[in-house]
Amino acid sequence: MLEQIEGSQAMARAIAACNPEVIAAYPISPQTHIVEALSALVKSGKIDGCEYVNVESEFAAMSACIGASAAGARTYTATASQGLLFMVEAVYNASGLGLPIVMTVANRAIGAPINIWNDHTDSMSQRDSGWLQLFAENNQEAADLHVQAFRIAEELSIPVMVCMDGFILTHAVEQVDLPEPEQVADFLPPYTPRVVLDPEDPITLGAMVGPEAFTEVRYLAHVKQLQALDLIPQVAGEFRDIFGRDSGGLVRPYKCDDAETIIVALGSVLGTIKDVVDARREAGEKIGVLGITSFRPFPFDAVADVLAGAKRFVCLEKAFSVGMGGIVASHCRASLSQRGQSVRNYEVIAGLGGRNITAHSLHEMIDKAHADQLEMLTFLDLDRELVDRELERQSQHRRSGSIAENVQRDARKRANEHLGL
Image 1 (cartoon, rainbow, N blue to C red):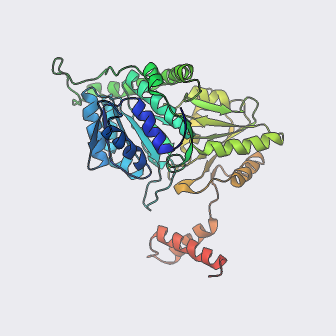
Image 2 (tube, helix red, strand yellow):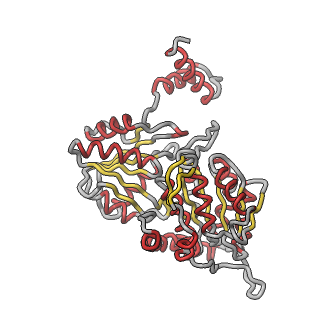
Image 3 (cartoon, rainbow, N blue to C red):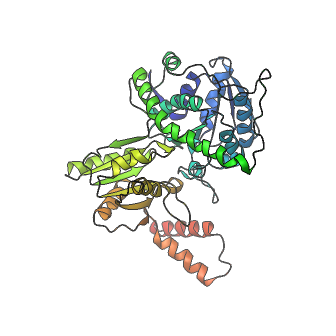
């Protein structure tokens, strides 16, 4: 059913259609509207037989989900940013125990300094936690991915994060074709757990595992991720057959068949990049976009299939590994190196802490890439004047103070000077 709706409300409706039996969540911006809406749906009886657990923290939320899932309940939670970090111990436990919990991560920057706006630092910090990570480009795809996530999680007995850009998607009002409960029932079978605590068939969950078996246990977690590489596109195909729209999958190439330059990205920024690519295509340039939906497991073969024919690719990333550089870019290079191939490439860090990624800046970035003038690691729209001023301050004063406070003060001072204040 088509409806003009806020992204968070659409997620709540899509999740409700999946009939979770336990929801345990702690509110944190920009995820709050999702769990508020779900609590209202549970209270009104619109999610049949669902228990909404009010908890005192994100760690408690994931812990409650672990207990519920281990008891055989279809289980859901949501978080963002510092909340995800607070639940990290339990996040690893959920995947290590093989529990098919579905969690929305409303992507938001991690402090300090505190920042409530969007980037991908939070979910990227958990890329090795054993959870699947699916990134949504828009609210339609985010809603659809939640429905698919339950199917994938329960088939493999592995937890899934659905990552959607905080505020940009969660608070955006746009048209979404909400999954109808009848369609979801056809697509998502009743939950039959692979791992469950049953007094009639006692087992141990979370047992101590020594050196003689730990490597094998961890390897089998890796095998599950590899199995997901086959299951994710299969589930996306079945979803298309029932719902009549293409959503999910491993990657989403756009105008890449003859592209000499390909921009690689995750999440909502793909929409802006596609607009820029369309404009440059009209000018006769051979350029395309590769959207990566499944970041974990990483689809090495699918990525290499797209990038191998290009002259260059640019990874536009909303997170980076401090002291190292781009995260997605290293994965893309590995995709090609596994085949003995190499393509000129650039890492561009952009949109950190919610900074706008404008079409103008993207055009400039592409111009420099075509001229081979991009640095291998580029920070889009980096204010070099503010950086140099702080570095000079540190070189002159041992007690130079807080970097965050200093840079923000300098930025405000300069803005006031431009305004004549």
